[in-house]
Image (cartoon, rainbow, N blue to C red; front, side, top):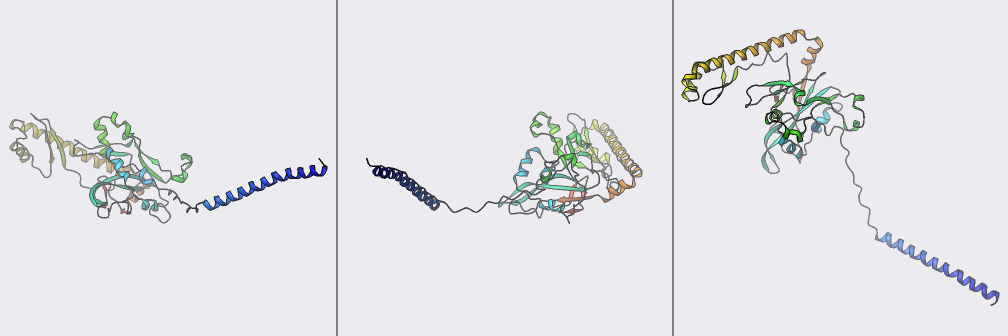
Length: 342
């Protein structure tokens, strides 16, 4: 073969991969063109709303006195407490103030989703105070023989700092909290191991508040609960020493065959003793309040006099029942009425 022929052959061999490379590049370009043509238009970006800093505040305040089996139903409704959150913002009622919050529920018949039903409406009470408004819990019900005032810690309750969402990663001891919530550490899973009476106590709990300057203004009870160990069955009744006359009261029980004639004198002595005990308790309570006020510092007196109670109901939204007609200022028998409903 001539040298020229060899060179031409070599050029032909070199041209072959070059053409193949061109074809491959052409395929890639075509493929890219097809992919571009087949691609879908970009969808609108999704925006996830940031959580508000105090969004879970109302849930963190334990709903005192609510039946355990009703708790889940309270949180099934998408309640909105933005009014509570706004109260801590600049210009709000609670801005810059130390506040102690506890929750409760009010069962009410309301219209919701086209039907009338009884719903447990959550309520948050905020007490503006330089110190905890109470370390006691009152336990009372119509079924109980007497009222109990016991330390909160016996019911595994205590005031703890509330940590806003943006500060959850910080150390609690380094934070200066102005919001405190009533928390209960009783685990629901452990309820089955408790006695029924102990479980029921939680349903009859009310935050107890000692008001040394107001309790003398309140009318003290003149009623006593009577549980007389009669035969063949005990006698349950209430006796008011101002409204009831003991002889007539006893005769009526005999007429109604609740009490036998031969137990009349024993019953009357039993009632008299209960009345003496109740009057003594009232007298001692008045004396204790008087002494507490006399020994109270000027700073503590001012704190009690300046305490304010705010009651927060959920804000009306399309997802929640209409509760506009069931709002009430009354908090409970220990706290009386709130200074303001929000």
